Image (cartoon, rainbow, N blue to C red; front, side):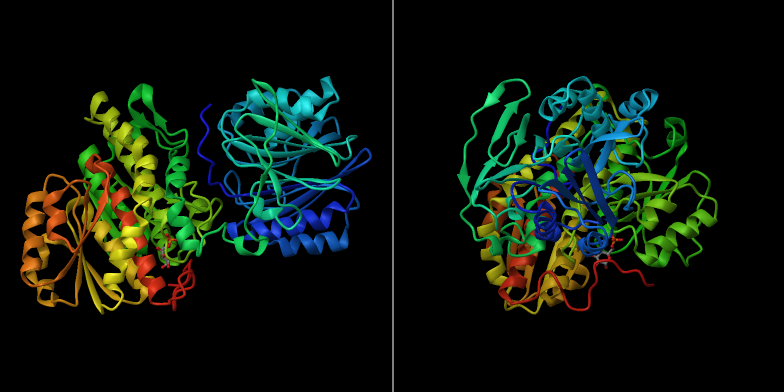
Length: 622
Ligand code: G6P
């Protein structure tokens, strides 16, 4: 079992045990986690021998209405906001989940993270008489704990005994019937923090949730399980035994942290991309075979080998990600790929034969044009696949198969982390298709290792934010900007230009670098910044001559290139380095400075970054 660095399947957990009524504290904690995005919410409380659960699809408001109708009276409980990953947002799939059998439910549990072996565990537990109510991966944990509780009526021990069966990541909150006043928590790859109060203790996936109650916190580490009562708390490591907790003080004001300390959702989402990529790859890279695999494609290797052409249909940022996919699939799988604007595809007489695979890409899974393209392809009898972030969305439901991004909710209207998740999924798809064709094991392995290195390298790029802000200062007064890139970096240039347009309202155009001389060069003057996306690669020398052409016309040059590239650095007014990396993953690194550049230009121009004018996060009209 390998933990992720804190997982971004961003559900929220709150737990409370103390002298006060738990329900209002648990719900107000959820309110403070709302900024993360979620699609259902729930509370469980334990008083005497009774477990009571209230949960609802939708907003925390809907849960509050339910609690008004059916109040909970208890001084101990857990609560959760869920963002659907396994199974759509519904009352049933909302957490907490109950565990037990024979009509006696003894465990209520909330979970953040992903359990990879839930299918096998579910089969095992069903055979033993545990009845499942939901489609979630979480419910297996509730039943596993209940099974242990039958053997020894000790919640702390039962959780510790159940956990070794899990493969995947978790942050957990648990209460058990007959144990009022006891909350158990556990962490592996998904954060959890204990709040230490006077005659009360709290548990949360983020200190933001409990900051109004106490500034004294103990952060759990992977492998640690905690037992909270009003008077005290104990931590045990699954392998190392009892742990002496370290109490930290949170030094920010509870009100300043609704965005987890970031100024905007967009910035937060840009910065969490290393984790986004980790989450998108989790369980999908197969070292032993030098390939990637996906659970939900619903096509056999034989069917995939028959494919002779791939068509991608998408809009906006998803369309740019698809274009990176085009270069990757052509390169690694030797398959012709076409990328279509979904809005165009649905009304064209596009010839599709029976060996064409149609993919749609959408962060939201609700974009009307993309849905229209999917329906048109289906109407014509083609198997349709979707690459989607939002589980249970319309596109996810209507496609014959597909791949989820597992990027967590994206709140910023300008898409950032969803792009990275899409590109890394497409890189894995290209690897998968390549390995079914000519790509050798060593070549496949090299791609796999390159993909594995992305999160750490992205982290390096994020450290250069101050330099990127200097570049933003150069662009703030401009009226036009050109973004230039070639080959696999052409779509990255398009995406950089789109980001700038969306949030700073500066006009920007993306172009293939060499195409510049056929028109856009006429725009170049001192006032027009040119952003060259030019990491070292096969066409690097040619790109440098294009940079020279702009230099000769006194254009301002911002070069995004490989660390140590003196040639590009000396031609650039500002050089933004990315680490040396194989070409197939360079787009994932090069896009980060462009996102931050757009962000800081918009910030400097005083724009409303998370609510750009005229734009919507999800466009459900044609
Ligand atoms: C809207 C958003 C864009 C997004 C596009 C496609 O235009 O403002 O940021 O890229 O829709 O959205 P999707 O959810 O289908 O990826």
